[in-house]
Image (cartoon, rainbow, N blue to C red; front, side, top):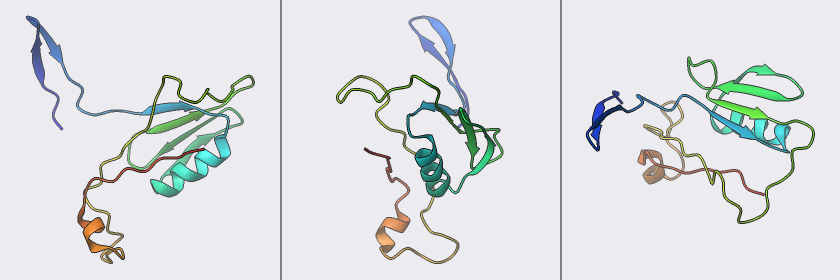
Length: 115
């Protein structure tokens, strides 16, 4: 996607070329690290007791997971991030299609981690 200048109530604004990264605060850092690295085929670039940076491309990190003392689970139905969605040009792994070829051709899939 190419960044474009747009008009907004007579003011010129610039739209981002792409989303750089997301930082997620969690009470389950190890579970989320395993899930995101598995689902995104990502690699861990940095990890300590409080944070992890992971990426699936040449960016320094696409997902950061942070956890520190005092972090608590959000109350059900509270406001905040609901989910992240990733666009895949194909869901084929290598040249071998998935068991449901209609899904493997669909570029839009939504995957989430839930309680």
